[in-house]
Picture 1 (tube, rainbow, N blue to C red):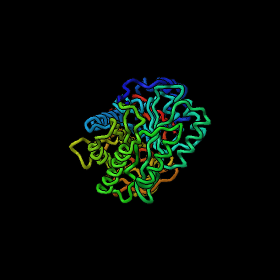
Picture 2: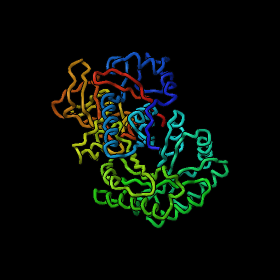
Picture 3: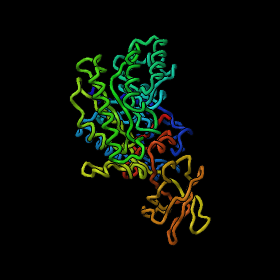
Picture 4: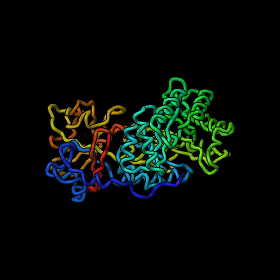
Length: 434
C-alpha cells in the first residue's frame, strides 16, 4: 500500500490536444486554433513570443527543485506523501508529484476527486467527510469498477458515518469505503471530532456500518488555535495517542496483518513537527502508513509560505523556491509617484498579501533590473495601483514581474499556465481544473 506509482498518468495527452483559444488568457493571439502541445513544442519566448500581459509564469527549474526536495525530505523522514491537489488542480503536476515518489494525491471535494480519477490517479485521500449521496454513488461505482483504486476519507461525526453508509447501501456498493476518524484541532477550530471520547463514538459508528471500514486517524495541525511549536506538538501527540488507543482497543483488528494503519496530518507550515511526532509512532499491531499531505510546496510563494515554511526552522534540510511570477505591463503613469499595471484581482492572489514587484523589463529593451522603489498599494479588478518612489524610472509599456502569496489562490485564477525556463523559453502549458 505504500509503494509510489512512478508511471505517468493516463489521459495527459488529451491536455496536449486541447485547442488554444480565448478561454486561456495571456497566450499568444496568433496561436489561436493550434493545440497546447503544438504551442509548447514551438518553444516560444515568454517575452518576445507573442504572449500578452497579464500572464502568469511558472518556473520549470524551481518547480523541479521543489518536487525533488520534498521527495527527499519525506524519504529521509520515513513518511508517505499525498500532497494536497486542491492547491494546483493540475493533472500534469499530480503526475509529476507521483513520479517524484508521492503515495497518492489528497483532495478536498468530490469534483476534485473526479478530476483526479479522470486522469488515472490511483490513490486519493479526501480530507473531508463525504455525505453527498450523488457523490457517494459515483464513488461506489468507481471503486467497484477499479479494484486497484485506493480511496479514504474523513469521518468526524456519528451522523456523517450513518449518512455515508445509507448512501452506499442505496448505491449497491460492493466495496466498503475506507475512513479515518478526524480529530479536531481544538475548540473553535475547523472540522473534526472534539476529543478522544467523541472520536471513539465516531469509530463505533463506522464499525457498525456495513459499507465503511476504519483504517486510521487523521487531522490538520494548521487549525490548532494559537498554533505554535508547543501547541502543535501537543495536538500531534494527541493524534498519535488516539491511533495507539484505537489499536489497543482492537479497532483495527479487522485489517489483515500486512495492512497498514493510516495516521495522517501535515499542511505546509508544520510538516517538520509532523515528521518529528510521527517518527515516534510505532509498536502498533500493524504497520503504520505515516501520511503527510502538504500541498503548497510545489510552487511555494513569496508571502504566506515563504514566512511559514518549516525549512526556515530547519535550513540544513534545504529550502523551497517560489516558482510563480505574474508579469503585467505599465499601462498608465498619470502622476509622478503613481503607475498602474494591467493585472488586478482577477489575475493576482490577494487574500493573504498583495503582490510584490520583483523585476522590471524595460519596453526599451534595456537590461532587466530589480523592482526597487515599487510597491503595490491596492488592487482593482483589472489594475494594480503601484506606488513609485521618487527618482525611479518606470515607463508605460514596461513589464513588471511580481511575486504573490498563497499558492491555492494563485493557481485558481489561471486555466493554463506557461511553464518557463530561466531564459524565458516556454516548455509546457499547465492546465488547471477549478
